[in-house]
Length: 330
Image (cartoon, rainbow, N blue to C red):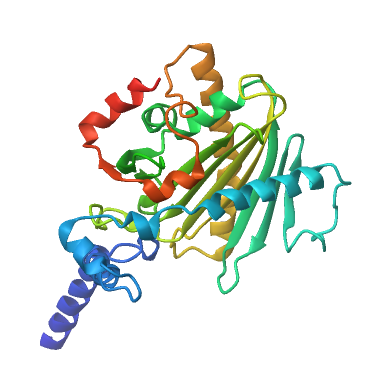
């Protein structure tokens, strides 16, 4: 009899313990993720080859000289845009892969929208590329809406938090903290990334480059899963000018959302989420134009010389003052 009682109590305790554990797809318990956060913080402060990393972590400084978006990172997407426009005028490739497309596989082909992917070596993930066109908004409007963090909080329902943490006032580079909802039952994800844009009036091009960084003022939170591998490059080429309707764009994107879902689920989320985001961005641009919503004009807000980045100096903006700064340039 006592043996049955003991077995019953043990089973009850085991069931209670299992019910307290979060699902696997939630990426571990809060305590485990806090431990990971602490470990990554130590690695960040002591990363080999990063001189001054420990001092920067202790003083709360971000090392712009090491993390700043380089000029070649701006020029490379511009060259890729030329290739994409040339490829767009070729006959469509109906096979699963095109031998001359550097491993890119066409996965979606619609009017004014083509989506490719290619495997990222050493991982189960893909890098994605979209080439498309819009004819009913101007390049300036589309570019500004994509960059304006205050306006995005209004049109993107997935945003939980979006703010500029630090700004390099001469080069125009910014460190951004972005927290976004993920489909249930996954935890929300947060990104810390540096972004830089460049507008080349002579070549009639706009370029926006973003990639993940670590910032001492934004430690990992047990409430979100930090995405450490993220990169996005957007290039816009007007059909005529920056202020006339019509342009082509090339978006190259990759990230590792760190989910326990199977590979096909993750790839489906990314490949379907990208067209959805671009559609929402396009509609937000139309809404801003039609309703005359005030959006910051980034094209005339700062110097456009890429070479000025070496003379850049950082500027920290408190969150409360950031929205004011946005409207000053509108």
